Image 1: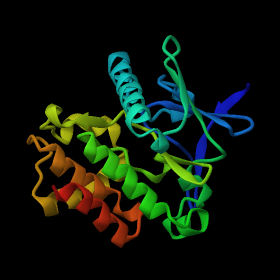
Image 2 (image 1 turned 180 degrees about the horizontal axis):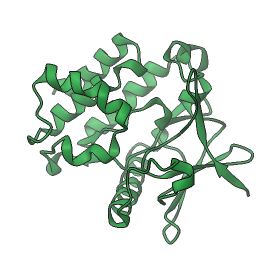
Image 3 (image 1 turned 90 degrees about the horizontal axis):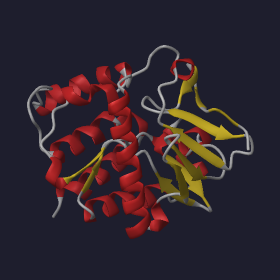
Image 4 (image 1 turned 45 degrees about the horizontal axis):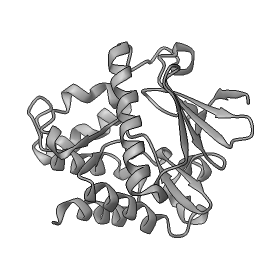
Length: 230
């Protein structure tokens, strides 16, 4: 099976790397997506975020840990996957491009691609909450559609309740410069100091706010409600 670099074709921008941390690969038949936890300068075009091999290992291990947990507890919400520990590669069984790419990288098209996408994504958030997980990688390219069902991945930026509090500053390698610029007004509004420890709950709310331009407003509010109720 042949794999090639995988990009998102963003309107007005063109081809953009699919992920900041790992190198994204897709099989020729678009049936297998590969998360290669490798610092590939060609793919990242010199804008590599994670250059420390030990940090890359940490990200790989988190992805494996929470994909396995989700597969055990909520298998309907994650792709079928296999892992190459030595190569630091995770292979996901998919059916074509990711959710965002299929929608032309525009949230206005989500309903055309998957009419019940909101209900499905909220089910995934409720699954995370039930397991005490806080997932901060919520970009719409973090989902594939398999047999009409959203499948969640990109768990490298996920924490359990016992791991907080966290600071924004210590996770800037996970956040693109463009998204940092979008996030700054949000942190100002929420009174969040980037160097001050924040609860995982607060960080989750910040994440929903920072991704609000990728989803309709009513969905963002519904997503926040999942984590704001007991």
